[in-house]
Length: 140
Image (tube, rainbow, N blue to C red):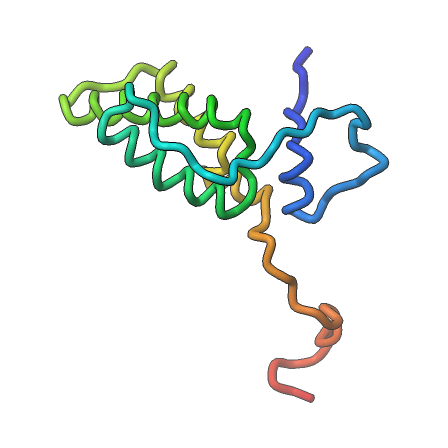
């Protein structure tokens, strides 16, 4: 028997506009948001450091990166640098490496499917979405 769909993080539900307080875990831990993004870890090479800086700054500005997420971000950047190193040497990544990298990309909303689960937080247009039903385009 399969486990089913992995639960969505509460802060992602808020961004997507699908939060239901009655369904949230009352004792769920909350961690601090990252305010000042740190320099990349020393073991990351140029490719890993570049991803650390660009992705990290975007996640901080979107206010979704929490302190505990820095470890997963480090793991993503390290997996990315290994992928790029193999690609530059004309070597192929193993299926396990590719699957792990894709899973990490998905965790940070970096695949088309995972991005559909989260909105940008911009306001939706107001008004009646069904006001034009039954009318031809341009008719008043």
